[in-house]
Image 1 (cartoon, rainbow, N blue to C red):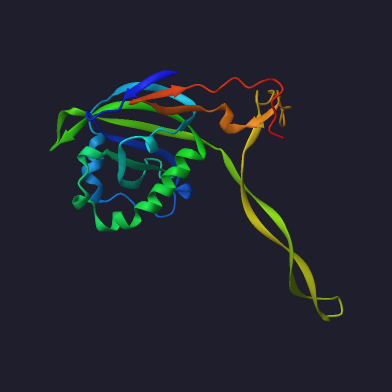
Image 2 (image 1 turned 135 degrees about the vertical axis):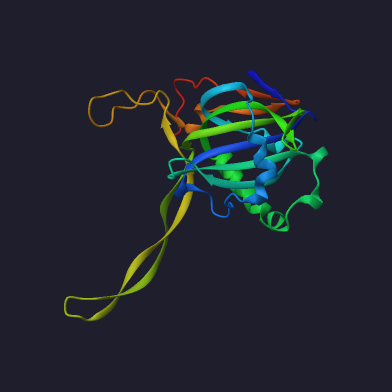
Length: 246
């Protein structure tokens, strides 16, 4: 367990920044505009790195903290094929509900749902910085914890499952006679991703054999958790050789 940061009144904001393909921007996340300048300005200046790029991270601390969502937006990156999606959380002692835009308040539940899916149903290569908090373009003694997340690994997937029911669908025989045939009813079901504990062997061509038992991808995750007021990085528990998620 490694300490990353201490959350207190001195940490005014916590910002999550996800780098995704444009086609993967969650629906309902607004595009950056002048309305977002007050929170976007907090990315100015140089911060102090408190966690280097770490693969396969699940961030699980914000729900248990004293921080609430106050802004969210996406902005296209330099190569035009990817975007940064940012979620800004503010310490409750600094909240100004009257200062929140009405359209944001209306969208907040949907934005939180998008955040929870990005944070809780994906593993990310994550690094963290402590940046100064700016007021009128000047750094203050308060700070911003920024978590930069990319290289996503989806921890869940949707599969099509037959319900056991059937619909009658019109069709025609070779003689152009109209008939009805049974077509199974299917639904999309979300299930966790399962992988080999040790990954796969490297081969010159094709896909190598799996190493070790099959386990949930989330069993291999590093987790950012809140212990008291400290954000800590917790390594995955050792997986017994006999473990299997099949």
